[in-house]
Image (tube, rainbow, N blue to C red; front, side, top):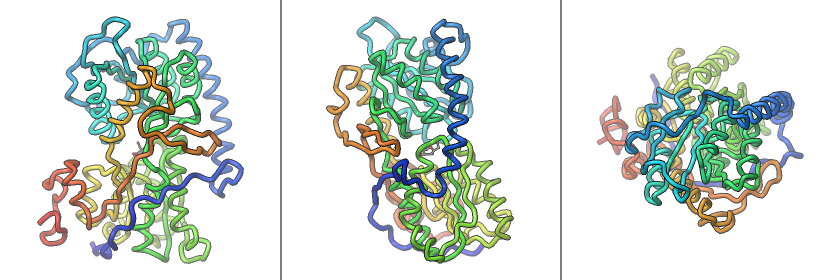
Length: 420
Ligand code: GAL
């Protein structure tokens, strides 16, 4: 296993930037739009049906969040996941009208961050405010999430935080909530409704930070691009960030994108399959991989390892997954763009309480206006990501995000400062 060339010192942390507007769609946009349009018609139809059923109270399954108050310290076991939507983490027993209830609809708990960092931070912020937390898990189903949101409303949610499975399909439920005067927070992923508060990281910046580290290592050669879920706006924001960094080199012919594909549900196993296809198609002649998150980067590195290429081809990622940071220390992954999800959860919990208590969208602390791809001016809270390479692993250790033991597992003595 050859070792990756030393990563250059990390540049300025965030470049910012917005996605191209609808009418100046880059080459990879049109196909996606037609496919999405057909699918959206179908989902909208199902959405209306689901709403009718929910209104007639006949759903019988999905998220019933009232029973089973559990202690608030343990985050749900992510492996449980998909269909178990009954868990409620409440800091107080459900009670009278003056009780403030915040409902959180998770599309799934597949990535470790959601249960390990995001959810506990939201719960702690609600606890701080004496509010009640109820939640649901849609198991990666856009249809289930529609029902979940209606159920959280039926359970008395005074504000909603939604991590959308599909930013378009969720619109009917968001409009229903806003129509009932229930504030909605679009958590981490854009939902194109200006009535919602959008709280996320600078996702174009995340993409640019990834690409900067990889481009510094591989200014010329063949690139494979492993994108996330097509129904998640972040997949295109990250791609736009890549374009900011490698676009010119691609136009100049220094870099060739030999493979580019979306990956359903950001699934690591599907990402591995994508990378295997990329290597087969390119006859292993790939010099760099831009993988949009750490979960998928794990699949990419597994595919490279099958060809004895792991540690030789720079790979990017995001989220600061424990395993990914270990890969950065080992040298099989070059960068993980870290987003302190504790900050995101805290900001969302506090904003949900403020909105439920009547604060106007524009008066929420720290908001800015964000121009969305569909020309909505979204009231937003945008947090700053940090690129983590072998040179600044101390940042995540000092932040209490990972302990040295986990980070440095299997790391050669003397190869990484923070592991000494
Ligand atoms: C994105 C999120 C990432 C990532 C992914 C998969 O929307 O920004 O952090 O992990 O979803 O859940």
